[in-house]
Image (cartoon, rainbow, N blue to C red; front, top):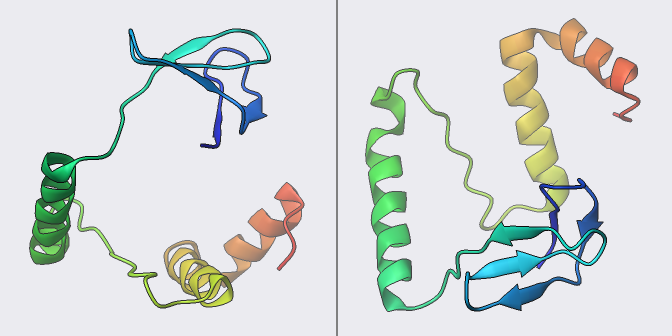
Length: 106
């Protein structure tokens, strides 16, 4: 598990799970965040159904959604696809300015 604590904002891979809640307990501040366990056949079936619905309806939602299947893509190919998507919507100059302003390398 790897996520930011909603209380203090620090990242931690080391969280304890309190099954009573269930809650993820963050070690930095002791903050507890509701934890949803994503396992079991029922959960997987719901995710498969959601995926099928997204594939069938993404282009017809308002606003339309663009889906990016990263199943067989490298990280570099995924980054390039996301950059192209953002660049298309913001314009290439805006994307470069955003990267420069945020300190992100191209």
